[in-house]
Image (cartoon, rainbow, N blue to C red):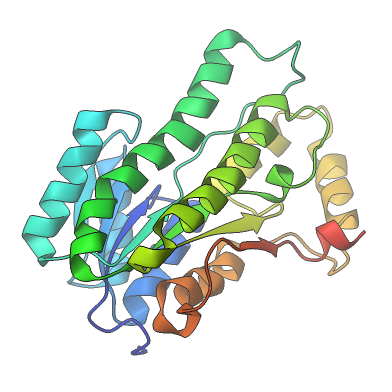
Length: 252
């Protein structure tokens, strides 16, 4: 157990699995009190057990404004404040601009962009009242570089990157910092589903590994460390920044 986030209160979305789960556990291990948000309560409760007794479970759909407002209100009522928001909830649909259906496009932007925007705007009054805070947005290397068959996903993550920068400019004087993390291919349930649908999953996995100079795919815990840093006062002069966590993917 560390102390880097003692007395910090955080909301983490998509906390039931993958990167969100790893980040929530890492924040809690450094002393933060964490509100865990996601659609599947049972998965959130599993994460809560890993976080320890201070975790607060809030099942919600981040694309719905009333549910987002409820999450923030209940977090404030339960913990008495709010210092950190980690926007991690996301979906991934595979396809070109021609292949993606309107329903897939809308779901991608509703979760990856609208949900993030709704939560960010909902926490601003509480952070402003507290004298500052940290908003951490989970983007992607595909929000920086394009890729085949990722028309909706990459577009949504590009929107996250620019929204991060705009919010950092708008709210910097209020000491509200806004930064983005851009992971490459991290082994989660989401990415496992992508590989499993390929005609040759083993070949696809090998191809993914080959484009990372570090020689392996990422693990959720590889991303959690920078989330702790951005949540902590160690990053007090860091805002509007975009952090690739990618095993060297963007260096190739």
